[in-house]
Image: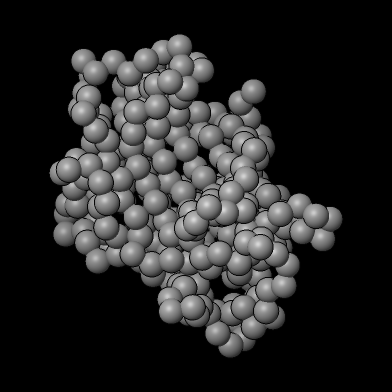
Amino acid sequence: MSCSIGLAVSVLLSLAVASAANFNTDTNITWGDGRGKILENGELLTLTLDKWSGAGFESKDEYLFGKIDMKIKLVPGNSAGLVTTYYLRSHGATWDEIDFEFLGNLTGDPITIHTNIYCGGKGDREQQFHLWFDPSKDFHLYTILWNPHRISFLVDSTVIREFPNMESIGVPFPTKQPMRMYSSLWNADDWATRGGRVKTDYSHAPFTAAYRGYKADACVWANGKSSCSGDSTKPNSWMTKNSTSPANRGSKRSRRST
């Protein structure tokens, strides 16, 4: 079972490999027929959508626990009907997944952050938020922190959501399946904006989202083994963090969408 209990103590106390990634060496553009581009010697990646296609990319490495950072500048102006994604996902029919999805909107209306967690192929753990800034004006830092204790979603180092491990009372939690990082820009105007009532206006195309600062401070999974081994020299690292400091929680700054 993908989310079964029983993580080895050596992994709980492991020291992860930190990697400030370069898009050229650490990611692959997987679809889009040229609509994904790596620029500035691997420091910048852009995804573009037009009426024919969007685009997407993925990390070359898989991770079993990690703190994954990405700076994203979302599609400016009228982005209604579009979805920009940034997430972790495993393989197979009973996959695990940790989602950031950014739902586009009409010019001047707030972009919604849609979060979800899948375990064993089952989701239904959605929460949505509106932010305290326009995420299309500049790059902002989005972080997925995933360790054996909890999953945290952070925006500019402020926690907007936490999902604790409650396997002890029968709530599934992803602990066994390594996941790869994925991101994409695609058309979802059947549901993304006001329940699908507002469609994508292709007169504003092409639409572009931009990425910088991809960093994986994580346990890389390869050949059935984790890169994490031995005792941690960082007792306050992301791997052993069991809660988030109240000063870093964003309940007064982000607004949960209903």
